[in-house]
Length: 96
Image (cartoon, rainbow, N blue to C red):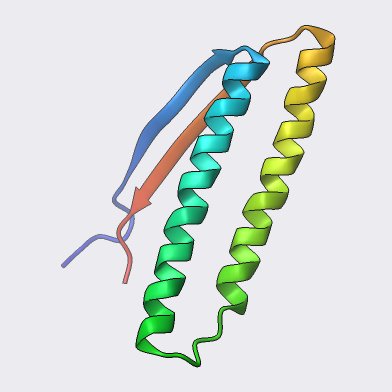
């Protein structure tokens, strides 16, 4: 039997960065995730040419929107001479 409440948190990033560093980091993280989703969509389309990509496209659009909001905040930090604190965790859980 597998317990559903077992989980692990992996800390990807935790620190303060210059706006330029934060911009580069977030850009690469989001780009990597979007690329992964696009590859998965392509695989699904190859196996089923009638694949409904609306949900996948919605996820990609949401990531791009979140990225744009983060970039606006980073631009504000740049204008005001502030650092950008980024805390990124991935929580891994077992489920059915």
